[in-house]
Image (tube, rainbow, N blue to C red; front, side):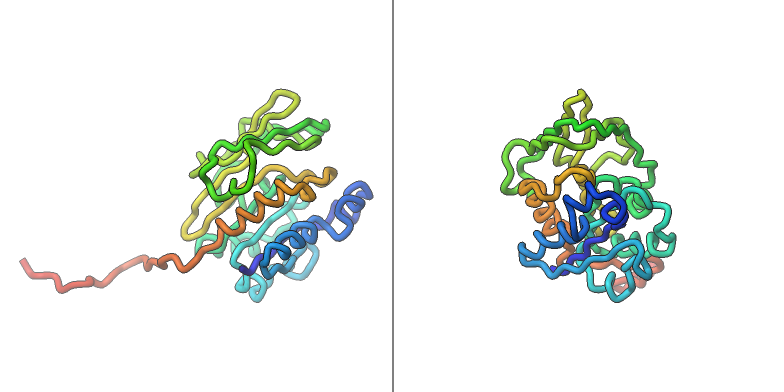
Length: 239
């Protein structure tokens, strides 16, 4: 499978705490364990021409993994619209952590995608609420993270097609942390954990979720429908 991992790649250049955890960038940390899973993986970052998402890159992508936080507004409308259309056409999309506020995700959801948040080293427990779903394969009843940024309800998204994880935080909040959506021919998975100052993407259970999600989101030869004025398939008898 051909996977592209997109990342702003700003925090790693500006914050030594982040660069110590992800010396080659969050995108390379994610790309690394996806390559180990047998995928062909390329990366793209915000400050590259076309944000690294040229036509050649996007046309060679089965699933796009997106991490963003502080520079959503710097993503061009042209690129955001292009990615949105490719998802509608069948490209899989994995939206991580603060990418809930990305232009691409908001365009596809049609809502503000706003939420509560707090950076206070909360313990997070992500409960598996759909144990039959392929994204949960290989997991236990929950994933526990010693420290993470808190996201709390209400999360302003449409009702998910499937709710996979619900998080509890040490401060008392809960959050819909893993949710799937279908848009056009494309499949989307939003997965909450991954604040840049914590080693979340080094956690094997978190890696397993993302590996599973990439496989789930891939579009494998589903029917392509035609729209607009249609000629009849059979001769229409005259009344």
